[in-house]
View 1 (tube, helix red, strand yellow):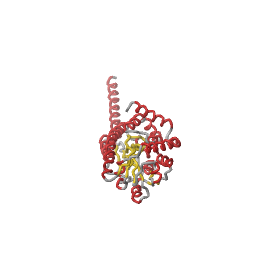
View 2: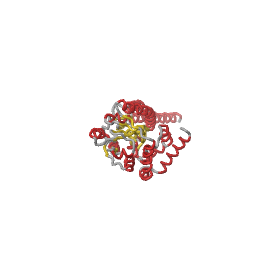
View 3: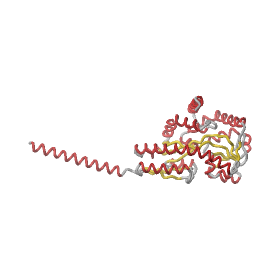
Length: 346
């Protein structure tokens, strides 16, 4: 009897051992067969720019951290078109991610438009306060619409640049003003000013300046240099008009296919590198104005009254049509945060 019991125990042990070995084999096979993910990412940033250097460094670290199970394939310099082209390609799955400015981001979540209100921010510290306090709100908005925001970036503050001096609203009304087709907020402001703006895609702006089709454009100083617009403009109006936010978004469907641990790594790496890029971009924008002036661009400084006229125009447009682009609740929250920061002297 004891011998039979011993044989049964040995049989059970053998079965357990075989089961464990079989499970280990299949787990190892499943791990080894874990699908690699290539995320195709499009950007307006040209090859050789600080943006592209950051994206390449970010990608190298992601590949290393995920043992090449996740990597980005980056398409720079409008190879895949303007931001609306990028969004269409993401929608049909031709690409899975894009580095977008606030114009493109607002097409995915309209409340981003609140960041594009002219004269909203007085300095970068205020921008940082808003994006820190409202980060979860914006990220949830993107996710509800099918996208994951990996991290914020920025273009910086936008300035008017022109072939004729622009210091007042009346100067603008007489000019041939370019408008980015993907910026409905800009159209709203220019409509309020009575300016019949000329819509062009970004690749067509340089030709527009060369041919005289347009003589007023707007961009961050670094953008004007990387796009070569600075070679055709003669004046920069020294009033920061609008803050140009940016960010990398990836299709939620694609991102959720990545293992949770790798998702966390990608988020951490993206946020770290793009935070560093912000500091670089801010410094480069300051330097870019010096580069432009050294190439003959003249600085136009409007009077206090002329600046107030620009602000009144913007406020009228926002009060009349702003609700089409963002909710009053979000605007009130942004203004409340800014008021608190200014009251505390931050």
